[in-house]
Amino acid sequence: MKLPLLLTRLLAIAVFAAAPVAAVSAETVLHYTDHEPYGNMRTRAIKDIFFSEIEKESAGRLRIEAHWNGERSTSYNALRTVQEGIDADLAVVVPEYTPEQLPFHQLFKSFPLGPDRGEKQVQFFDRVFSEIPEFNAELERNSLVNLQFFLGYPAAFFSTTPHQNLSALQGTTWRTASFWHQAFLENAGAKVVKMPWNEQIALALKDRALDGLLVNLDSGYDIRAHQTAKFIQYSPQLWLGHVYLLTINKTRWEQLSDADRAAIRRAAATMQKALGPLLDSSLDTMIKTMRKEGAQIEKLTPAQLQNWLRATHFSQEQKKWIGKQEKSGIADTGRVLPLVASRLDGVMH
Image 1 (cartoon, rainbow, N blue to C red):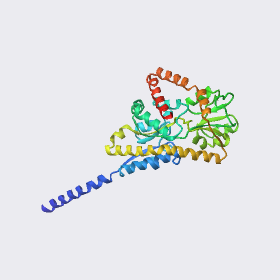
Image 2 (cartoon, one colour):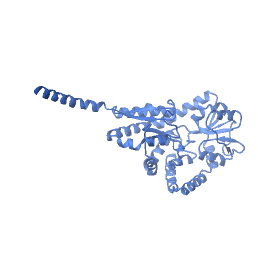
Image 3 (cartoon, rainbow, N blue to C red):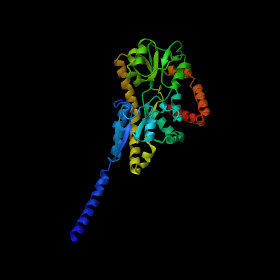
Image 4 (tube, one colour):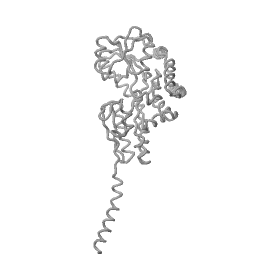
């Protein structure tokens, strides 16, 4: 009888001794999906800075398993994918692709001009998300929690002819994605056509079926638009208002320990400090690269930017959009718009 009792006690001691080791080595794996391939400015920042900081700040308790290039979800399905929390715990959500679910987030692109430096852009979005509760509430209604926002390159006018007068585009045909930018171009006199974003764009520019594109610099570069529409007008202030939300499923977020959530917040703070300088240096590199490849790039002057601003009639377009939202039962957009505008004005001036 004594031998079994001794074995039982030894086994209990062994289990007790092993328990702390198991607890220390326990790892939570979060699955992330991104519609773009790894390698550009944003995806490298996410993986090399943000995800690395999460693992470091959590002392290895958290690990992000990243799936790139639409492996688990397309850009248009990302909100639903992370909302369901089955194929991925985290995803980059682009508000423009889900305007019905995220109406407040459509407001950013309604402003033709933004801050002239990456740091100021970061300050603007930080203020909006921390000071205007409607944005986080909108995400929460969709079972999402935003961990960190990411930004991209400014917009640019890719044209087949030099020195385009952006405030008088009569007789020209353009392609742009955002409904805001479509309205801006039309108000400036252009004809706007809708075309899929593929190799047909470059062919249309080459054949002069298109006179130009209004698109972010890196997207234009990706389809080699600078080779067929090599006359490019840009400014950091043509900021696009395009925000990428790195979100997590709300239930999954709440399941994480307090320590793990705090680790993610610290990692996000580190990422946000690096974001502004990264935007500026990446823009400089992109401009140099495109010039080396034959693009003729003109930086818009303050006067040209103001001419474009007036030509867009953006305030009129904002009023139209708010009226449509109110008819759809979303009454607070008219109240939130000036709150966003005041933050934008604050960082720009």
